[in-house]
Image 1 (cartoon, one colour):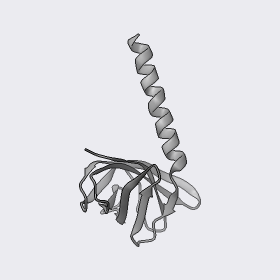
Image 2 (cartoon, rainbow, N blue to C red):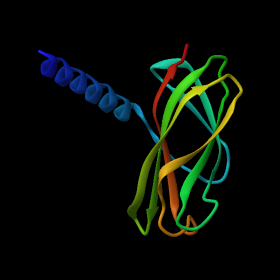
Image 3 (cartoon, helix red, strand yellow):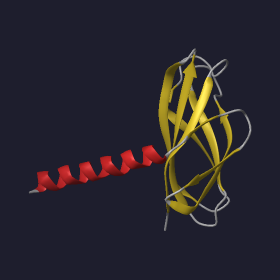
Length: 131
């Protein structure tokens, strides 16, 4: 019985994640702030203000401001493309962002090399209200 419940929970998470990915659109980072919103939650409003890599072959750092009036939980996917090929893909998660709060988070993986000459693409994967 427990195995069946775990299997059902895993399937539910996969379906939720899959539907979130289908809703996410990807934007190329061009060193200017980007506004993001989440269609399933109108109160979810974010602004990406910076994408950087402090040192070569280190994680990518993403700074996001919660511009909504509520506390949020969200995840943002970061992809790096060089010469038309994806060379990096990771997701950052912010569990608790207060209204107006700026959150800088590094990716858990390191990008080999630098961001120079690469295209950084972002997509909002999920966003929900946090109590």
